[in-house]
Amino acid sequence: MKHIIIAFIFTGILMSCNSSDKKNTTTENSSEMETTEKRTSNDSIRELKSIVTDADLIATALLSAPEESRSESKVIGYNMKGEFVTLKEGNNEFIILADDPNKSGFSAACYHKDLEPFMARGRALKAEGKTPQDIFEIREEEMKSGALKITTGATLHIYYGSKTAFDPETFKVDGAKLRYVVYMPFATSESTGLPEAPAASNHPWIMNPGTHRAHIMISPLPEEK
Image 1 (cartoon, rainbow, N blue to C red):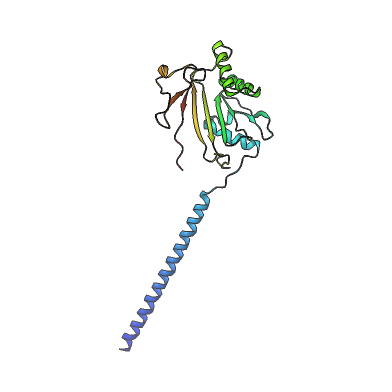
Image 2 (cartoon, helix red, strand yellow):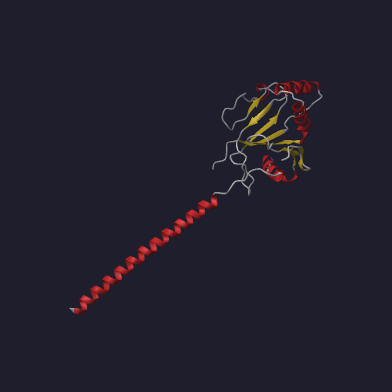
């Protein structure tokens, strides 16, 4: 009888130990999972940086160009001192206009080098104090007279957004997205078959039809976060 009682007591002690071990193991596992989740969450939140140097201007502007062309693209624009300069030399078909650090929001544009005379003319007229409508009318007349030219099919890529903070590892500007323009001087809806308003946010359409600034607009859907 004494042996049976001792056996029962021993069994009870073993069960109690097992139960305690399971609780400890569960608590440890839960704690490890919590730590891992916190670490993963912290790793995914990368601190953004403000544009404060010319190098920042160049790095963020380059994202407006196709990835394979960035290293050889020329970058121009206002530096942090407010001077319009060549920020980076290049030797391919693209010229990139960096974001103006003195304006709110972010906007960088990459365009085919054949568009530079047209773009430079616009900048010069603006510097003279001409209004956007004045610039439009002057370049319209110069295009019609042949004094100014736009190569049909030349492209413009615009990387833009309401914020200027960027990821220092990828150089992506927070919330910025791309919009594409294909210049088709004096083209119309009838000559291209494109509507004058987008059927959806990522569908092409023609803007300024029938004028020197007629162009196909394409606004891709924003990336999912």
